[in-house]
Image (cartoon, rainbow, N blue to C red; front, side):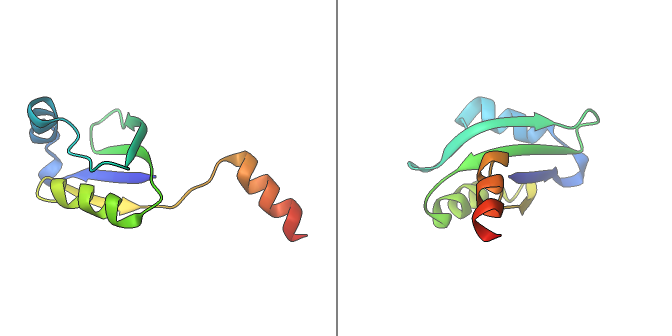
Length: 87
């Protein structure tokens, strides 16, 4: 899960770049879905990849407009299976 905070509280430059240039993702990085906080302070994006450098490349493409926090997540089913095998 990628949590984005728009620099200076300004989402407009992000949306303008995305409209002009797309998501600027390297091959192998997969966008799953995103949700934007009602007040436009943060965006939550679910991304998938097997190579962390792909995610870091994508972040570098947007770091002038967005501050990023990356939180590794698994599905609830994956977490339940991990708990089951660990106990």
